[in-house]
Length: 362
Image (cartoon, rainbow, N blue to C red; front, top):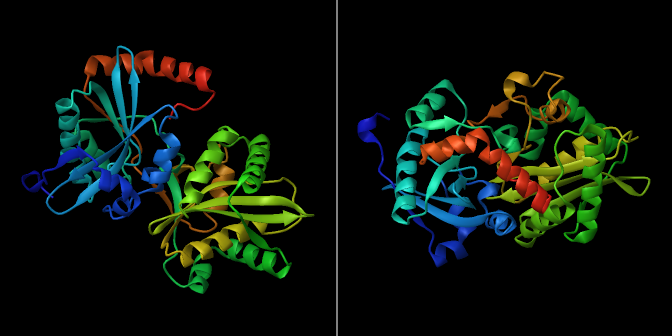
């Protein structure tokens, strides 16, 4: 698409009707939306250190619905974070979309000093060049699935099983042969406590990813479960939970969001079987893609020193390809304040928020 044919966009905040039907609108986005743009996630974030706004960006042939997270700082003004957005039909659309969004910020006198974006655009030299040409500055990535393993689950289950590696397939079949059984957990505190304990166990043993508070996860799980979008899967050993997973169905996409296990288990292939049970359930719910949610970048998938090496090795036993997205970029609207932000303001505000709430900043 050359510059002469760039689409023109307008940006506005969502109407009451659009907010009431938010998920229906988001899942109709060009890329099918993202569970981090969902109504459930908006409920998790709203008031949890962020003000949630719902942004609608329109052009002649499509409309894109996106969550916009806002933080306000003394002196600095407002930071806007388009989590997993904007959802664009093409990377070329991001620049005119951001022009429309920054115009909205100015018209509403919002005093926004930077707009942080992380569109689901696959990383490539061309994509990076497009974003740079749009005046965007590369920023550190925030979300764990900016590099991830995606499995196509659109074919019948037996074909999907054949498509995964022989290691994963053998693990699934052996676990089934040996009588390993996956049960779906009912939404509620019992399942929440069980999974959180398994996540804590994994975290203590491997320390791969920081664990937020139980209250945060309970709220997260509750919001997705109450909308019929969250599902728990468990395997037990000697009567106690030994492997657990929480999987989200959002539109046509499934996401393996949280998981944990006890160490030194006797059942071979139990964690593979949990994933296989989840995949089949997600197929029943109409999903065609399964996101394993977080691996090392493709270039470091075999690097044993990477903190996500073990997780990456497990997840890529289901799908060989690692998808790297472009990750986080900043559109600078207030250059002086942005420089202050990079020179230490962000670090200070992050530390203050962690001290005040005990939670993570983003």
